[in-house]
Length: 256
Image 1 (cartoon, rainbow, N blue to C red):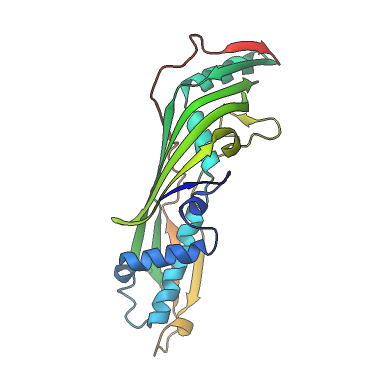
Image 2 (image 1 turned 60 degrees about the vertical axis):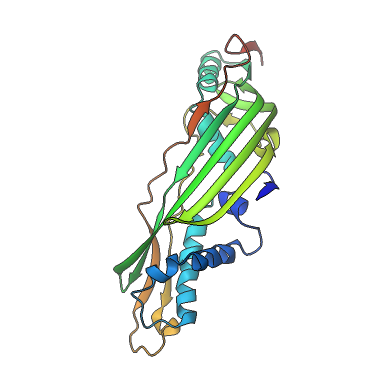
């Protein structure tokens, strides 16, 4: 599916429609058959109970997809050699600016979070997710001042995203962005040296459901809980340069 995407979207909003995206993810999980394997240890759960647990897993997985596409692009640019060099030079020479005609390049970002299902705090199943995104950026002209990206004069960004659970596809989508709209630079721009708080990371949360409310014929009060496991920050996106920079020199220096 191809769509013109709105700016500052999260991966979740990009992959699923804005209305009831958690419900769409839950339906995709159910259709994939992944939930049947994950809830096999809950033999006493009714169909409604299984759906409730599936909703928990979908809600947590949706939270893990709450990372901005613009943030992932910027994280990739922090590894882009031309921008890094310009940031270092302008940081060292306070008040200086450089305009760079960037090479066409791609940024890939991969995330593999897991959601663990527990019954009375005993692990019974783990659902592994795999999110992959590829950004292809062309005709981008950037201004760097004092180590910060302060403007984008042009540029196009094509995005391909895919979400899987286990080896089952859940959602795929492609989009087309005007780069200056996709990456808003308000205020003093975005720092290129260091993370400056813009680190894309999985969201860790725990959602509990009282089994007495969702299990049929039980006399226990155990708790079914779904929680994220192994939530370290994902690796920084990889940058691949497709063609040589358009300018012979690394940038044109000019006063602020």
